Image 1: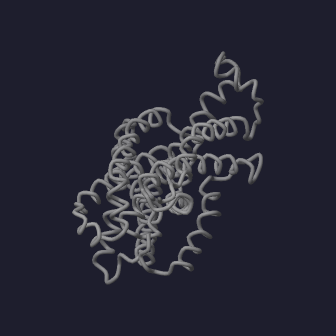
Image 2 (image 1 turned 60 degrees about the horizontal axis):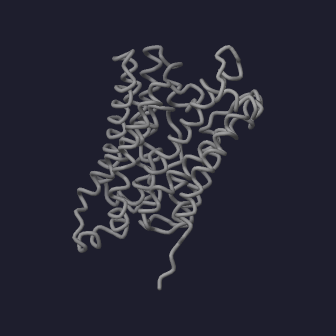
Image 3 (image 1 turned 90 degrees about the vertical axis):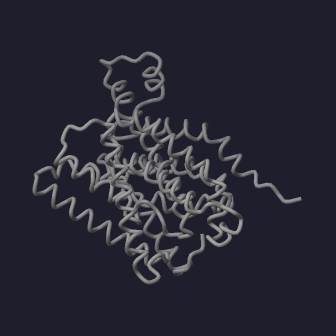
Length: 335
């Protein structure tokens, strides 16, 4: 009998405990440390005139919830992209998906200021689709353009281009300070309305990912194998992209650009549990959420009492990991 890998079940069973512990840790520590009794009283006997209670409920709780959601969304998006394209370098931040979202949000801030939270999420998702479409479009036009390294280069170039155009637009229309939110990932400035909307909309993206998870496992073996097994590869890819666009668009609308989560976490997840996307999708979500929340806690102590942008922390981990993948796996498709 084949040996059953029990680690995915252990991870998912431990997830609620780990999430609660991470949430408590994030609430307790920061520029102002708060004791556990105060946190307990803030939840059971909230006093709006108590400064510590206000910090806990209106700032730190939304912040850690946002970090958990965004980490999960980006990790699942990265797992889907890597499985769908068999490209070990695929991720929303490298393939221009997050830059597309930030670019469209910049346009909206100039030409449609004061838009609702729902429209913010909608346009962010359209931007995700735009960024992915441009990168994969260019990749398909170039010889061997869809290989991991070349596609990563195209994604980096297109992402830099979109970021530069966004910066130029923001500077011209004098909204640079507002736009900087989406390029510095300020978790402490999460908009409550977007956080509330992100849960049901994000759930749709996760459900789509779970529905096609088994098909992604087959697709990751190659298009020929997938077709020979009777799988409708185009439909699977379309649904995958819809999920990626949905989850990445929400993440960017919620906290801005955060790099490397979608690159690192799927690799760690596959290393732990194997190549079955039925388990990779949910486990990557759990690991990604906890990972980003812990990175947020670390960012508060790198230059204490001042906060370091969380993108710096994820980049310090992600860039060496990115270079390691290029060095060890070369340019061949291997996911």
